[in-house]
Image (cartoon, rainbow, N blue to C red; front, side, top):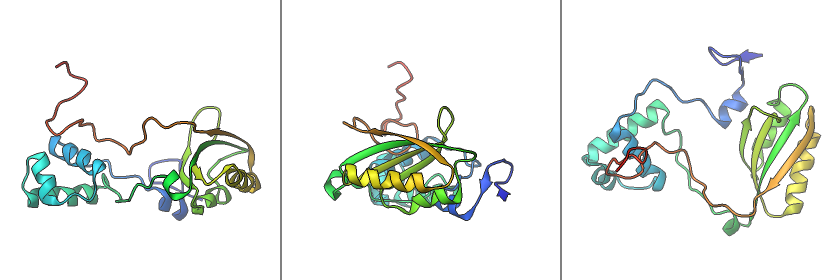
Length: 186
């Protein structure tokens, strides 16, 4: 077994494919944070419009986005889909308890299932936390059966979402394009 450089976290091509750790070397300035905030709202924005929103020229905005990508701050661009609109109205979070290390090859194979949106190794009273979207309770039941079939899985606890009040990607820390910080008094 190999480990990630400088850690005791197991390293494998499969877990790297799920989510690699971005570089910690880049220091973000106010322009970078404004650019990241704008991209989380609309990643398809033109560089001219992006530059206008953050106070830079289009070429300067483009160059900064290239550097943010190279540093790992922006690691992919995706379309966010509406679960109910694509036939997956059931959102659930599953706590998975395991005997031993949770991120086994067999358990991590569930990452290939289209219902699985996120897999996290967590602290607390469970080993893994998995976010899934399914077409129905029967689809969730089938997913749970696959989880139980993985060697080492001892139990699960499922939490079905009734309502979602906020769901968004990681935020860069800027709330608007004027640079106001909500933690500072107005």
